Length: 149
Image (tube, rainbow, N blue to C red):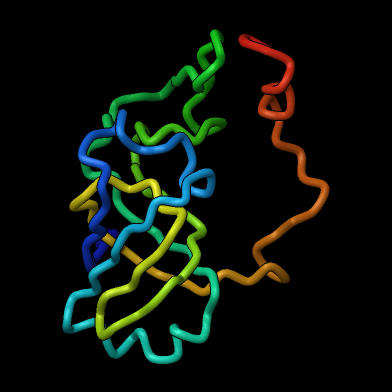
């Protein structure tokens, strides 16, 4: 049995999916992450991190989708080879800049979550651990060559 616990909520200017940027890292928009009081003790020392991995539940996603057509593409792809928010288990993550932290409120930049999105975890981002050089991103490497590539 799996059980996820919501540890907070994301506050952003994005009200609907079409309002959010394609990828949060491409945006300078600031958002707030509210961590519920019972989880604030878990934030100790987090203010020393410049970047975070934020995991959240895309509660408004279509969980029946198994194929998706990425932006600028004409071919439908298997959802697991895309970054579509619509998927059977709509867990999302963003690498964000931590701008400030006051109590249980984190001000961040680079998040693409909709306002009211449930927060499920926060982890420190480490370029030594999380960045992998020379990766193969499959069909995405061809995105610069045009639609349907």
